Amino acid sequence: MGGFAGGDEAGFWDEELFKLSKSSNFKKKQTALICIDSLYYTLALKPAKNTTFQIEGLAQDKQVLFKELYKALLKETQDEDIKDFFRAHTLLFEPVHQEQKLLDEDIDNSFTFLSFIKESCSLVLTQQELKEIAKTL
Figure 1 (cartoon, helix red, strand yellow):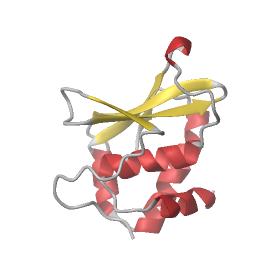
Figure 2: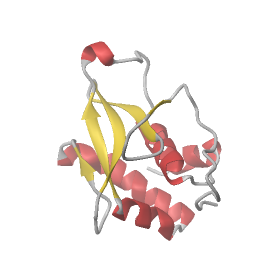
Figure 3: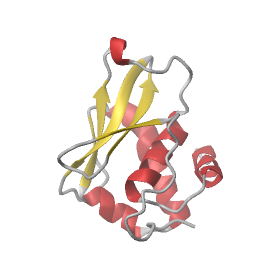
Figure 4: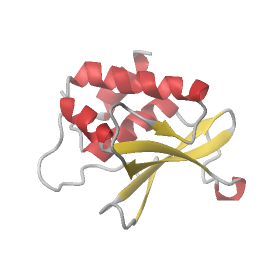
């Protein structure tokens, strides 16, 4: 299980969960919508030189779930490429203005976060595998 997909393949993208936009920093900038305490954020990546998994734009106490999910993903996949990817990128939580909010439904933050990492890293994981990892917390 796990690993980066070969080539330049974009893989499957669930348009219900994610939006795509262009960015000068990446060929394809991927974002996902997350809801924390009734506030909405988009997830994005920025180039960085980190020694560990880093999150910006979110209070320390709100980062715990996402850091634990990251650790669970590493444990399940045993994939060092994920660590390398996040040494080169910082995960950004960017606030969404109320008028920009697109979804009124409940968002599964764990699954959305893991799906975002899957797409960002081109991991070879099924949706069922992501759901199983999310259930470990």
